[in-house]
Length: 164
Image (cartoon, rainbow, N blue to C red; front, side, top):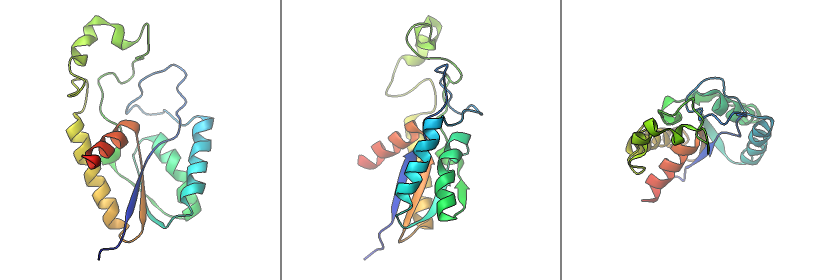
C-alpha cells in the first residue's frame, strides 16, 4: 500500500488592481489588504495540516501569499516557474466592458476560438507544466502534504486535467 500524499493547489490572494488591468506576468502587482488577510487566513487554516513542502510561482503576489504559511511552518519556499501565470497577449490591457481590449476590433482575431486560445499559452501546455510541478511536489512531500501557490488559470486548468 502506498503512502498517502496530498498536494494543495492554491490561488494567490486578492491583488491590488484599481485600474482593472489584466496583469498576467507583469511585475509589481501586489496583494491588496484583503489579499494579505486571505494569505494569513489560509496559512492559519493550512498550518494544522502535515505540510512539509511549499512551492510558489515567482510572481510577487504568489510569494506574498505563501509567506505567512512559510513563517508559521518555519519552512523554505521552492520557487517554481512551472506554476507561473499563463502567458497572455492581453497582458497590461484592461479587458472590462466599454473601453477594454475586447471591444477593439483589431483584437477580435485573438478571440476566434476560446477552446484553443489564440491570445496566449495553450491550455494543454499549462496542464503539462502544472502536472509536472504537482508530481515533483508530491514526490518531495511523500507521505505528507505540499502546498503550491499559483494563479487562477493554471490552478483551474490543472484541476480540469486531473478530473478528466
